[in-house]
Image (cartoon, rainbow, N blue to C red; front, top):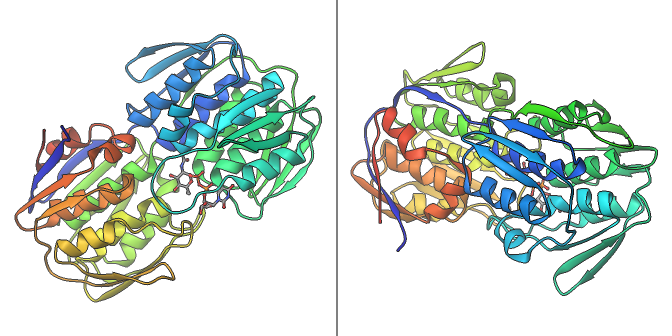
Amino acid sequence: MSEKLIIQGGNPLQGKVKIPGAKNSALPLLASTLLTDKPVKLTNVPELKDVQTMLSMVRKLGKDITTNSNSLQITGPVTSNKAPVDLVRKMRASFLVLAPLVGRTGEAIVPLPGGCNIGTRPVDLHLEGLKKLGVKIKHEDGRIFAKTDGIIGNDVFLNYPSVGATEQLIMAAVVARGTTTIYNGAQEPEIRDLVSFLTSLGADINMNGSIIKVTGVNELGKTTYGVLPDRIAAGTYMIAGTATNGNVEVTDVDTSSLKPLSLKLKKAGITVKEVDNTIKVKRDQRPDNLEIITLPFPGFPTDLQAPITALLTLAKGKSVVKETVFDSRFGHVPELSKMGADISVTNSSTVFINGKKTLRGTEVEATDIRAGAALVIGGLAAKGETVVSGLGHLDRGYSKLVENLRTLGADVERVK
Ligand code: UD1
C-alpha cells in the first residue's frame, strides 16, 4: 500500500538540522570505486534509496561492500561488466558505471537509463565523449555495448556542461593512456568532490574552471574519503524555514556551494547568516518577489527550482522562474495550483507566479524528487492539512525527512 505524508501546516520551522552527505556526490563516487581493486572507505554517505540502488549495482559488478551506518568499506575486483537492467532503469546515475567498466575491462554492456521524470534526458554527450577517447559504442535493444582496446587520452569539447557526461569522461580519462582535456566541463561542487576523491586514490587531475585536464595512471590505490555535504538538501530546509516564517540553521554544510540560493534569499529580504560551516535563515518579513533562472553551477541549481517556486507562491508580487537545464521539470506547478497558488507555466519553460498570502492544504502528488520537496514546503506553510503521495520520489533524495522536520517543529507524519 502506498504511503503518504500528512502535514498540518502553519508551524514555523525553528532549530537546527544537520545536513548529510550529498546524493549527487555519493553516487558518482560509488561508481568510481570500480576503478580500483584496493579498499576504499567512504564516510558521510547518506541513507537514501538511490544510494542503495548504486550499492546493489556496484555489488553485482563484483565489489565486496560492508556498511556501518554512514560509512562504507568497498573492496575487490570487478567481476562482471554487465549492468543489470532493473537497477539502471531505477536511476539515471547508474549509467555512470559505463566508463569505469569499459575502462577497467575493455568491454561493458549498460542499459539506457531511467530515473526522475523530468524531461528528455539523453546520454549523447556521454557517448560522444567516450568515442573521442577510443571507445567503440553500439546501441542495440535499449542497451549500450561499449568496447575498447584501451582508452586513449584526447581533447573533448562538451556542447553543454552536463554533470553526468563530465563525470563519465573524468572516470574514463583516469585510466586512459595519455592526457585528456575536457573543455566546457561541468563545475558543480559534486564534480569537484569526484576530482578530490579520485586524486586521493592517486589520479592526476587538474580542474581549472570548466577545463579539466586528466592524465591517466596505471593503477589507483586506496583511500578514506568523506562525501561532500548535500547542498540541495540544505537548500530545501533553508527554503522550508523561510516559507514557514521560521528560523532555521543548517549545519555541516559547504556555504560556498549554497551561495546562489543564499544570495537570492537575501535579495528577497530574508536574513541569511553564514558562520563557518553553518547557515542561519530568519524571515523578518514576507519575502519579496524574485526572478530566478536555472543554470549550470555557479548559476541557480535546477534542483532547487521546484522548492523556491513553492516559496515564491507566498512572496510579495510577481515572480518569474525560468528553467533552462531541463525541458520539462514542472510537475509541482499543477499541484501548487491545487493548493491555491496563482501560478502558470509557459511552453518556453517559464513559470509566472503571482504571490499570495496563503496556500491551503489539499491532496497532492510528488512526480519527482524535487517536485515532492516543493509540495512538502507548500504543505508546511499552508493553512490546514496537506496529504502528499508519491513518497518513493522523496525517499530517493531526502534522508530522515520526517524526523528532521519534526525536530524543527513541523506537524508531519507518514502513514500507510
Ligand atoms: C545531475 C544531477 C541532477 C541535476 C543535474 C543538473 C546526479 C545524480 N544528478 O543529473 O540532480 O538536476 O545534474 O544539475 O548528479 N543532456 C544531454 N545529453 C547528455 C547529457 C545531458 O542533452 O548526454 C542534457 C539533459 O537532458 C539535461 C541537461 O543536459 O537537459 C543537464 O543534464 P546533466 O547535467 O547531464 O544532469 P544529470 O547528470 O543527469
